[in-house]
Amino acid sequence: MARTGTVLVTGASGFVGSAVARRLREAGFAVRALVRPRSPTTHLAELGLDFVTGDLRDPGSLRDALAGVRYLFHVAADYRMWARNPQEMIDTNVAGTRALMQEAMRAGVERVVYTSSVATLAARTDGASADESMPLEEQRAIGTYKRSKVAAERAVEELIAQGLPAVIFNPSTPIGPRDVKPTPSGGIIVDAASC
Image (cartoon, rainbow, N blue to C red; front, top):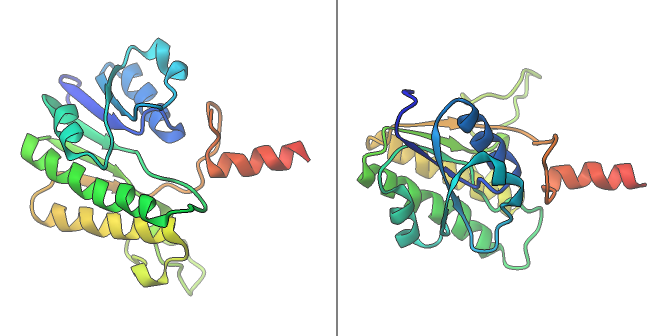
């Protein structure tokens, strides 16, 4: 990737997104950060990000955030172990991802990096590590979060087949410094350390 032009990072106020935004800034990119109105941003103050307010469930805000953007790192997700209203997770993770990818295509974004999840990969029966060659079927995913991430990844794959210039990244269990909320994964570690 050429280091000119603006990079949009969704989820920049979150744990993984903030790490991506930080690394992009260190590499010399101009970074625009899509954040929700109530997202914490004080931990990002020193990075010099261009903050834009929006929501994956608001296509108009996505269009505005993508104006003039060369690259997109879609890191935002509704990552919860449980939700009183599971439809919120589906709306953000599936419909929001699809809308963002469609807007990226319309805006002529040159490269998209979509942060999916290891939850989209099927476990192998031979004991070898799971990889992208064995995608998990949505109906086999356990829980709303995992089902939503499988459905979202399939939507991105469909758009790649239609010309979306995207690659898919499948991380697992993010832990480490600067987990300010913390994430569900980080919360497990905090809870264990507090016992």
